[in-house]
Length: 325
Ligand code: SAH
Image 1: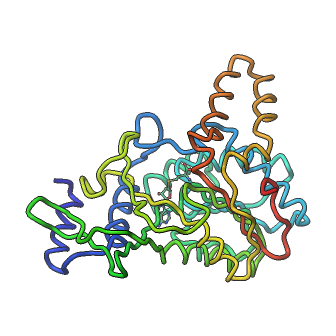
Image 2: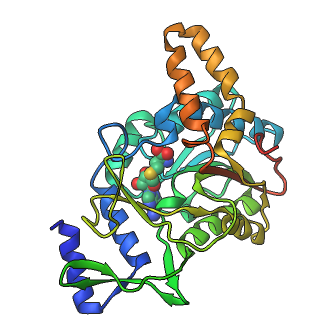
Image 3: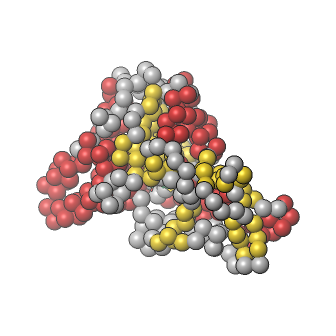
């Protein structure tokens, strides 16, 4: 039995069944605090780990938006859940070349991943919460951050919980599931309020759906395969699909401007991923196949291109970033 499972069983015995939100929160805090889960040898691969082109296009989009906003010198690059720091390193290379000289601020709770980030972006500033970001214009990006935040699940209006039976951890009820995520809504609300008050733009990239719909999207991934959500708690990555309709509504309610929700494939194509691959392969002719494979992985309809979505939210004083038609 995993150390976290022992603790959770103990907790359920003393407090009674716990919500999916409490379960997911405990599992992911433990999971990310105890490992670097990325890459072929780990549990899953994210877009910035697929190819440098992903972060470079993020950097180009942010740099262009920043320039059109008048290139405010006090703006900072901010990232939520930066993982290994790969996206930040690739984005900053391009951002710096556009003249951006601002600070770098990371919101990250995992000590293991903070160390990894420090190796590639040594001068960054770290924070535990979005609310701690400096009160200045933000060039913010969050890739696969919102999917890791805990959700609640309801069956016929009653909260679905995790309990202990003779066989181990078990869900209390089955039926048509409706998901909400107050924690995710609060994260988006905090980002939107910051942008409205201090200026800036945020790119939110994740897998999920453009329209709200009922359904159970809670999933566990281990070693690149789907796994049971209730087995080995804290040893697997727990995520849910992001409800982008809800994300957009929360941001708009806070007074921020919201772009249409687009697929990652369309967004990367509009940002010029093909031209980027051509330019890179002129300098590295032996890597042409690698760049083409990465485009397929990031943009292909059967791979990440359609399932992953992107939305930008920005201050009413800032222009809409490129890539959203
Ligand atoms: N953006 C990276 C990593 C995605 S994994 C990439 O695309 O590769 C999720 C990231 O969010 C990890 O860095 C994890 O430690 C961090 N994270 C998860 N929950 C968090 C929370 N509540 N607060 C801050 N960071 C969190």
